[in-house]
Length: 254
Image (cartoon, rainbow, N blue to C red; front, side, top):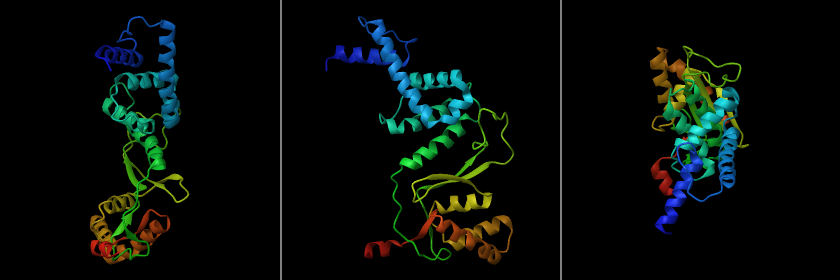
């Protein structure tokens, strides 16, 4: 490719992304340029509208279009894959922070994105024993199960509810893709959230996780563990906890 042609392509790309700030290459018919501008932008707006319907509806047509224009013109994506555009949009919104955007927007963008991310995820679980002892073994959390904590009530924000201040208590959620390939969100209690976060490290037994939580709450460890075992069993039945970790020696033996 000649240097002149490369420069023409870059000039055209800059113009399509931000026609106000960048002039088009000379010699191109304005009507055709308009068609290209509208085609490229509308593709991106439609893609993001499908991925972030709550944000689009909540902001309204004008503010949503302005936000997409900003993303289209300013953001330098790290991947050319359309399937990952949503993650790039989340990164853009988070980078803008409070720059004229509602304070809850970054978390709402992440909340809408995570459902799509889990739906298309090809993450594979580590080796585990599905029938392992959940108390004395190391529980294995499904890679398709994520405990999430948000300052803002992301599950409630919409056109009729746009809070000005964050509530005192965070919104704690478990998002999980089940064997039916459906992604579901569930509100969880603070202790359940901390238990799931602890299991992400896969370094302690179920008994140790529950004992640590008992120490936090000041409860008697034996009683707390007795209470916590049914919770572990329920998480296992739901597929959130897959079983228990298989030691490295056994992995090699298999």
